Length: 235
Image 1: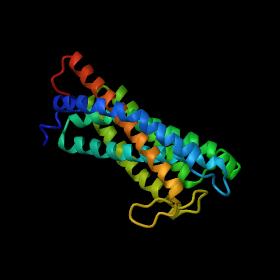
Image 2: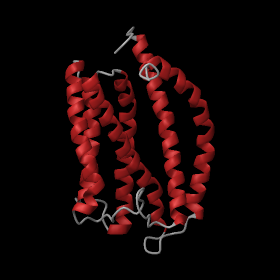
Image 3: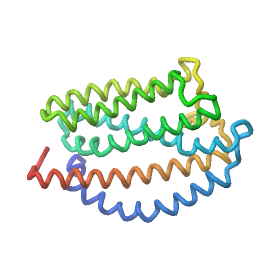
Image 4: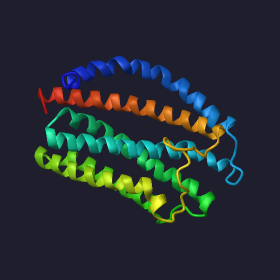
């Protein structure tokens, strides 16, 4: 299993699936936009501004998922010295940070017509902003700290603290009174959002996930090429 996860084997595997991803991305994006912009109904209170949800919500989920995976990989590498995880979390971190920023910006745009303000220091908004700070500090740590042992320790510490913050983001609406409503989409429970909105939301999530996969493959291959150019057989 670990042999399959070596950089060389993953490089070959990722090359094989890259073409498939590029073929399905555009048709899936077109279908998703048609559902999101034209076929889904406006909200009876928010009107057409609710369509921001189809970008904001998947971006938030991806930002949380990326940092969760980064946290696992960072701590795993720190404990077991599985060096390939460094390449993976270096490829994931910019993606997660980008979607975290998109989540905050679209949330602010959505907040103006819904709440009457672009920003409020409630628990979920603040914890998402803190997550963005963790992303920035994490990327700075592996980019600008030359000592790899020190960099790994700092990244592992940031990852552990960031995972704690992810739980705060997730359960902030349950712990405190916030502007955000409680979760409408639940994996283990009843989903309160109507199917006419759930379908385009799911489609947009798939589009973003496929796009993330494409960017990840490009970043990962770039990291492998950079490593080989430096003449390093291993990290």
